[in-house]
Length: 124
Image (cartoon, rainbow, N blue to C red; front, side, top):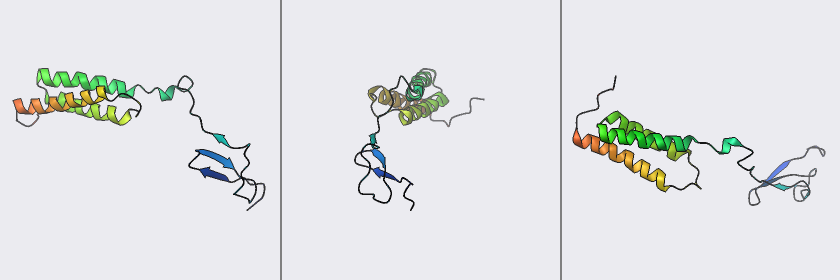
């Protein structure tokens, strides 16, 4: 191992990466260690992803179409949109609205099949 080559030592408990000095892995340079701080969402527009909100809204619209118009394909699209919304949401978001959208889409599927138990015909 070369002396000028810095190795990255990952410290899981601290969540930081420190380049070591030469061969001595037990004493990393404390000046080179920096704790990771996520960038604020104003700087990074990728953190403000509107996909879960759009899918939640689409799921509610398709659920209402499935319930009111008795369209089975709308109810299944609502379930699909609810799954996408749930998969793309952050853990810090409020889950009440998402769960209500999911339950509305499931109820649209159940009610459309209770009213007409025939298999779904393709919409085309």
